[in-house]
Image (tube, rainbow, N blue to C red; front, side, top):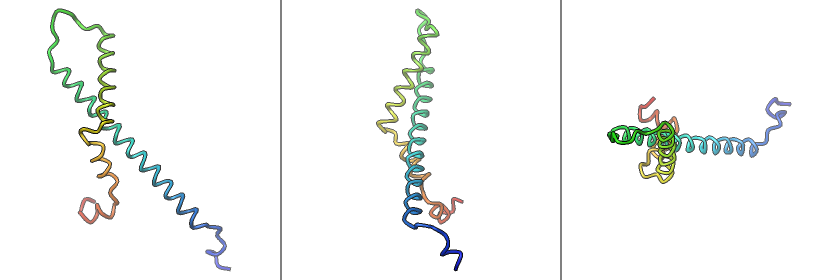
Length: 108
């Protein structure tokens, strides 16, 4: 008996597990790209807020600063969710390109 014939491999099961893994990886990549866009927008909002001078009449308390930072984080998540910038989509398309296509274009 041939060694190949002795292996109990079901081709359809193997193919479906590869597709499942690919789908999971795809979802994880999309999520990571979305999170990166939210982080980028949060950084942008933080720097924009820092560029505005505070008036000297009332000083912000530490609690107010923390609240403002948390609120900016929520704004960033909502902005990234609505995809006006499209950074996550661009990153996803770039990172999900097959390696063969990257090699053909000379990207390594």
